[in-house]
Amino acid sequence: MTNQPDSVQNVPGEDRNGASSPWTAAAAFVCGLLACALNMLLITAPVGMILGTLALLFGAAAFARRRRGQAGLVLAAVSYLIVCIWGATIAAVIANDPTFAFGELWNAH
Image: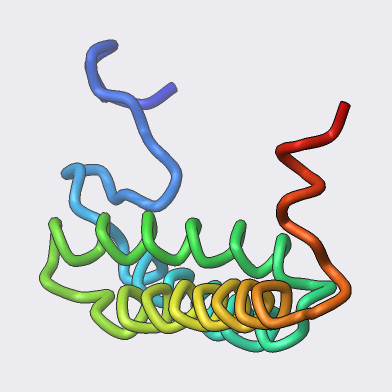
């Protein structure tokens, strides 16, 4: 048995005082790094987006509590930027493809 009151709950990633542990910033960095690597390939981008979101959440938690986790936040932003570049590239290819007729989509009977 512990001597903690019932109102105090141990949350994973936090110490007994409620402060974010140093592992939260490390988790943000690792998730952000993996997100950037996975977002380089279009086929693994959905997994990269999930890891980017986790990096954003872990980085925000570490930054809010201890002013750490900036690397995780930056890597999460870079991973989202990579996905935006993928989206813009695909949109540009579709928009400039002469065999793809946009009118047929809206005028289909």
